[in-house]
Length: 282
Image 1 (cartoon, rainbow, N blue to C red):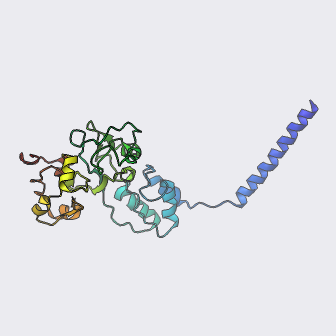
Image 2: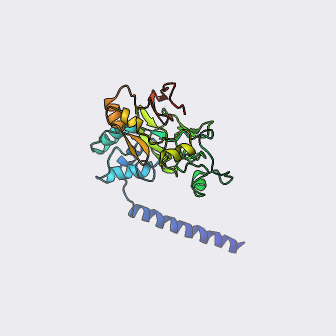
Image 3: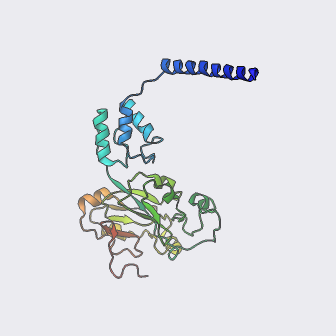
């Protein structure tokens, strides 16, 4: 009994000694934290999306406070309001933040895009892409397993009934996490208000693209020729829209009116504009 009591006393003594040593070391070597860091972190939306280029909101808050070269407008989800608030706290000048939204550049639903083989592997876009670049004949199209949906911290993406991701523009912060997660690079960020979009990512030539997917851009150039502002160009057999030109100069887009596949379309309040009845006829 006495031996057990001595052991307890010794252990308690050792614990107290180590406690005092740690307390002294903590006081002696304590690193003072800049009080602005928690204030800045409190302003951030806490999505931990990494759009700022740092590993979470705390890391960005520390960097923007301590590093004079880190801009105060890197929090994309926070938009201009957060940029202005961070600018005010840090004394830095915040450049204008362009609001943006995710755009899924693929309309290759199962009824339009042909399957090259029957895929039964992991329901994961990255894994499926490793097997002959996916199960679709179009090697550029969305694989529909929802990697983009899974990484969205704001609930802005869902998988639609057609197997393609659907973006809720009201919830999308434009953080770009979905864009990074897509192995096909199908998702791109567009400025909010862009009223002409191309729902295709295929780089194949016209005949091959149309054979693989009925909704493909065939690179015919009709849209570019019908744009009076030269806002559309063809690159790698695919139409690209310069949204800055389109939004600043065009209020009534007609470029998509004669698209034979409907790959390019206009939008009003984030809803597709119906094309003429002849469009899409083969």
